[in-house]
Image (tube, rainbow, N blue to C red; front, side):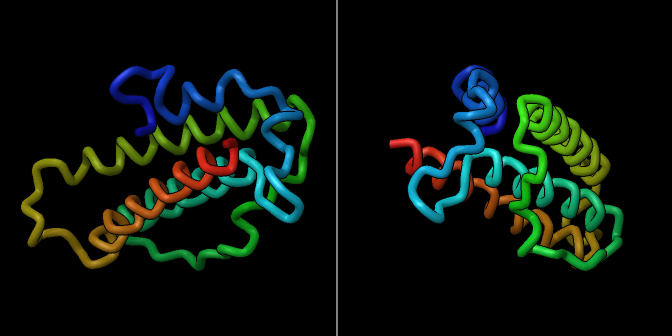
Length: 130
């Protein structure tokens, strides 16, 4: 759902053609923009990566949708950071690839479950666009 099966149909391909104006616009008054959801996914990916390393940093969920720089450069940065966080998360999961699940500590196990939560945000972004 991030890059498969065809990159242009998955999340990264879907957000790439959006202008900053489109990405930062609220779908309805008080609604969260695509950029806010993308920033939240980046936050979740980075947090999950930390937890895969057996660290459990505090999560400031309320701030995870913040997008202070609403410029075209800000939108480019948000997309670049999502790609970086995604790749780092994949690398983190690959470190566990050959470990039996019973050898995983509880923190990475919770992180795997949380990854499913990010699918919800993709659905929300899609439903807000229609």
